[in-house]
Amino acid sequence: MLNCGDTFYAGDSEDDEPHLTIIVTPPEEGEVVTVTVTTKRKRSETLVELTAGDHLYLKWDSVVSFAYARIRSVEDIETALKSGQAKPMDPIKPELLKKIRMGLRDSDFTPNGVRHYFKSLNIKD
Image (tube, rainbow, N blue to C red; front, side, top):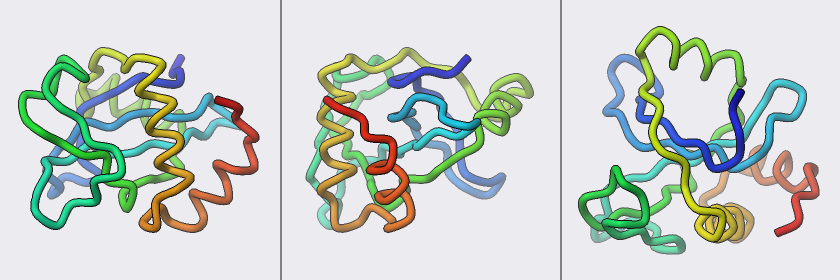
């Protein structure tokens, strides 16, 4: 069963470079919201910056890229984990989850559908 703060390493498609993906909502009617961590670059959104140590996987400065936030099927994620298309990673700490959720709400890059869905869940941090 997937939980808030769980992470996995995967790409969105076979051609996509894999990234650390974080589940930021509890499963609701078989769906969760995920965000993607990317390497920090000059033009990266820096609302939520991460450094080595914020997660065991991170070895360099990174950011949460809210433009890649998605509503995903729990079943699809679990299938990818079972088939090896995604690799489970250690969960993030609760204080980082809270920071990421605030960023999801505040980012100008969060897709509108994801933002509205997230707000409809009435998650209190």
